[in-house]
Image (cartoon, rainbow, N blue to C red; front, side, top):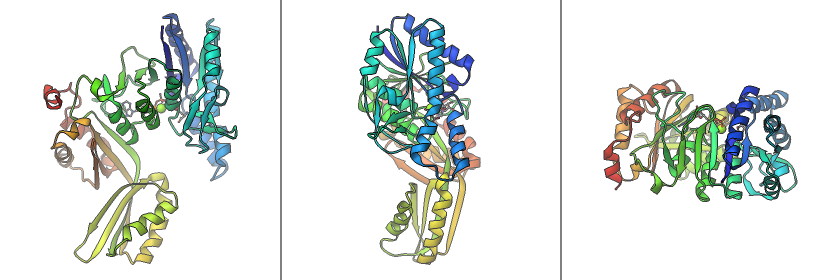
Length: 415
Ligand code: ADP
Ligand code: ASP
Ligand code: MG
């Protein structure tokens, strides 16, 4: 008998039929003799709907009130799931994050979990009941409801699994596991039986929303294996684990992308020491996060300074940059609010050269101009026009044969 934490995402509990289906799956796990703690997301689309409601009312909803509002989505699905289980003669009780004792910091809408109390869990398990917990939420030191950022139910599940020392944390979703890239964009994407924490962390931070980045970070820190599985079909899914446990080592594991980028470029700035700090200082004073940065010196003793921000922040960032351009005497401000970031991720890059050139060649052959490039130890990211995203992802996927089983070469190289 094991203690298992299962998380069901928004589409898995998207309507009453699906809630019945999830209740049957939980029942099956219980009948196998396991204790189960379940974390649920809001029904599909509900969190978006609640956020839109708030923004239709006011441009800047109070963060405390916004958290109270958007945490309710999970409260609906948890109660319905508990009712469905009870109707199947399976004792279950649902709890909000506040009731369960999920303690977070005070950062509304992006809170981090500090502690998960286990006394309620223990009491309910002793009574033989299934515990259903609302994902995505907790309480701060003032007793106020906080939420954990979009996709935060994954993190709730991992945090609970760590607190109760579960055998593994199972994340049930609408795809069979983690693929080489989003299977909804690239049908040739292949299911990965395993992926390392490090690669999964990169994939999540670069836009693969299958797991929230914070959940991977937490699981890796506390050595909690995560298994991503489908709610709707049988299978082993994907195990997210440590690098040394990966059987089929590959040069690259996957492609992640984000459509939510925008580029701003200041060109013809008279060259002077400290100019970069001045530009970025103004942008970060406005709490705008900068992603990629590039700078070129020109023959005219000026520099061109280019950076990317989240598309949501684009109008605000542009206003700042236009003012700066006047102050600095820059020649022009160029923008593109419709760009995407395409990233290739793989631990094999550490020990292998030529990955970047293959990636850039494949984009070149597909006729896709690269606007910016950044690299780190296990990833290469490029900014391309959003219209080229799908074609670019396909080209890279094919160039690295990600649709095929890993080549023996990849094995030899790591050994
Ligand atoms: P849930 O509501 O279950 O939390 P999400 O929508 O948050 O589900 O995450 C699952 C989705 O992640 C999939 O439907 C898929 O479109 C997307 N996704 C992006 N990249 C990947 C990937 N590499 N592997 C699997 N799914 C991915
Ligand atoms: N319901 C929240 C969201 O849509 C949390 C989650 O689904 O994980 O972001
Ligand atoms: Mg999710």
